[in-house]
Image (cartoon, rainbow, N blue to C red):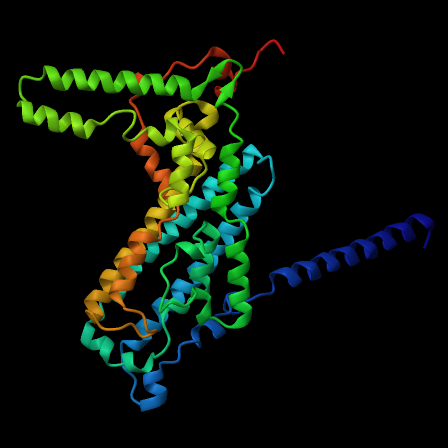
Length: 390
């Protein structure tokens, strides 16, 4: 065989070898079965009705009870996955603007998951109270209060231990094993998504720029708005004097709803009393973002804050629906974990709000027609202004 023939033959063998290597690599990554990839053998064999194991005669509805709660825990795992990623993107002193968009996308996913979890309650309610009693006595002392992942979600979002309603006077971590309790204490004492969001809001650059102070112009607009509304009430021909007096009292003044905005000391006093939690500067920044959300650079910050409020609302709705389901199933019976059942769940609905301060911004909103005119220099920054000649 001549030199050229040897070269062609060797290249052919070499090419065949490379092809085989690629095929083996492809097989390594593609040789997986649906059943194995999803771990279905483990998941589908993880339902063990205690009524069957103890009595030998399973209560039909216990399978539904187990599967619904297992589905909850799987979705809780996904929520934790999303919240931890968003929290980590807000750790730095300067948040990459591109990450705001990613955060909004992932928080919207969390919101959709919570909507699904609320809908799952309707599936649970296809089980009647009498059906539940067929196996309830096998659940003691297990309780949803012992869901480690749910407590972690609350901590990641920003619910602090001093805000929690205590069960039997004990800390909420007392029902968990040492490793899980330590992890919950760590997430509780560390910075949450609430804390990082507060830090991010405090760095908002548009509150004071040069001679412009947002709060001064906002206060002037609020006073003009209130004066106009008072004038319209007094000039009304359809209201009696008593009705006018009542409406004027309900309208209030800058010292009624707006005092904590215009006086930082009042805001700090409210924080001490537990009436608000968000810092003064962060609250003002959130107000500015809500008022000027139509400006291009504030679109995503507004969407981000809206996502947090949506999740807080979904979580509160889930708590409420859960409490209603418990009332429907148990009435005023004590919960399997030793809680007061419905009463405890109802109290968490009212008190375990995390982003209440962001919802409260609505109290301070004024019509677009009353918004203070922003200086051109700030409008340029808010509108991604650039010079086409550069």
